[in-house]
Length: 228
Ligand code: SAH
Image (cartoon, rainbow, N blue to C red; front, side, top):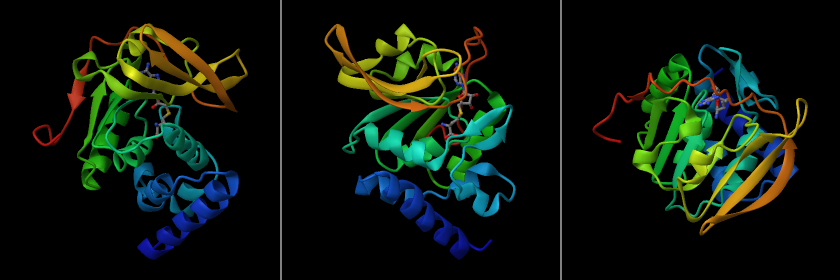
């Protein structure tokens, strides 16, 4: 496929999957029109990169489907000044979309190979305002917090408390939580002082957030450490 073909595939994705399903934010639609999703899939994914489904990225993980990426980004209610923490870098695509809307994104991935691959694509595309670290994302990134927004892109069975402590006053966490083995929903937890208000937004299907105690083998993956 040529660059022009990819451009057309993206326009179509925005029209048929996002606008047709209620995504309204012009800023989010522009980001989804701009970020070349196919580049995050490696190899030649062709127009499949812009289809409706989640896409395999190896290691039994998936890149979230375009509609859900747009839905989550829209619900982050970004005005343009926020600092965002993402848990579950995966391909790096969601981080890229968010990074075109805010000055700084931090993203944590537990699988080193995915983190390194994502770093490579983000650097190649100039998304130098994304920092990535290999770790258990449930621990957050306390040195860089607090965050205005925390986005989970893997489904937790319960919200890790350490993440909540890394939210700014009035900030919120958004992401999938498992209700039981087969059902998940997107929830939103807003920090108000020492209390948190809770809202259920939508049913969903994400890969699980894995808590395996990894956290000792941590490192920031940064080819451009001095710039980010
Ligand atoms: N945001 C990604 C979606 C990736 S799928 C994208 O745009 O492509 C979820 C990712 O979360 C997977 O890569 C998985 O390895 C990662 N993950 C699962 N549990 C994790 C944990 N405890 N800490 C950090 N990453 C985790």
